[in-house]
Image (tube, rainbow, N blue to C red; front, top):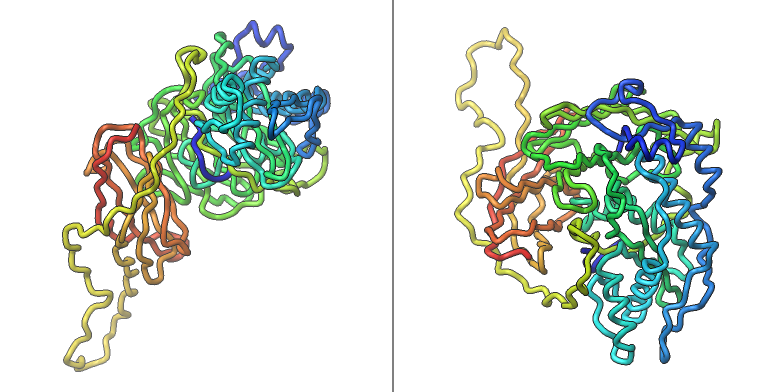
Length: 510
């Protein structure tokens, strides 16, 4: 489920759904897409749908009943205008992604999310497992706690932060260090099996706390897979520079086998991603945040996506290959708009709700607070291997004659090993502190439940300016192993150093 801390498909719908909704049905072969199963919508169709289902990123947050945040508490209620704008924006992004776009508001879900926002606002803490305010009615608290445990939640530091900003630039982004490894918020928004949802928000001097119900699974006819964001035709207004790319396959994906190639058609620039080496961030998450088997990648250079940009995505190692093309365009016809929107929220989000329930949950969420972080002792692991000298020793005897052959170019020196100095753990989040490596262009961290790094493997890119990074361990009763290495860049290619010391974590991750 969502946990505390910071910020916070492509072909064929079921025939019945296509007929009922009048969807434009285009076969994969007509779009030259392979291995994905979602509806394809043209740019003009997307513009028309968004115009008909009007919603703006900066639509105001208004209330039919104002929340009461002290004394005799009352959750309040969002105005119909705000709720309709939120559900329209919600269905816009689902239409763009090629999945069902007739998700409806549910009064029960609206109540759950509105009360969840109230409890988090009163506590001043964003949590899926909120503690009970001492003076709050038990029934009101229980309703809010249930809603917090079953919803995407977010916090913005300013008053009256719009719901649609949280949706597009918060939950659909999910590119912060605490969420990029699984993109749980995004996958709940783009879950093909959703039929109903609800929205809630409370705002005031403590900022704005918001929620979107996630656990609905009542669209039992959904059959889409290969749910991609950005989609095949993608408005630049809804995708920002630092947003990760993702495609959810609906089945388990082996991170050690899958490889992604991203090509920009304008200049032929290529980014490659795998568990061994990645030109940026790369991970695979098989947990049930909506649809499992999510392949996540993000180029290591900031890209300003502009209307007219075209990218090809090719994925191998899945048993059958996946390929599709992403065409960026503007919702404002003919305008070269660059993402992202001018107003960017500085929101705090939790992790997304954990995994897809087998049915709509009936139990109250577990209300527990995690223990305080405890610092682990500095790692004194096995002695590191002696490094090779950076340069060959100079000859002691001068040559008798000037060489007649041009000497070979000096080989690129690999960066030194990365030393992990210490680490801290809180629940499943591990903060790793490491020493900087001279002349490093960046770092890579890998973590696994196997000392051979061949099971439950995840990799993450780390900036050269950092001296710490955070990884999120998978649920397991096994040991966990973490290593880091540095790399330098030579002629546009990465030269990796050897993996450094291993830290071992003997802790059950629940």
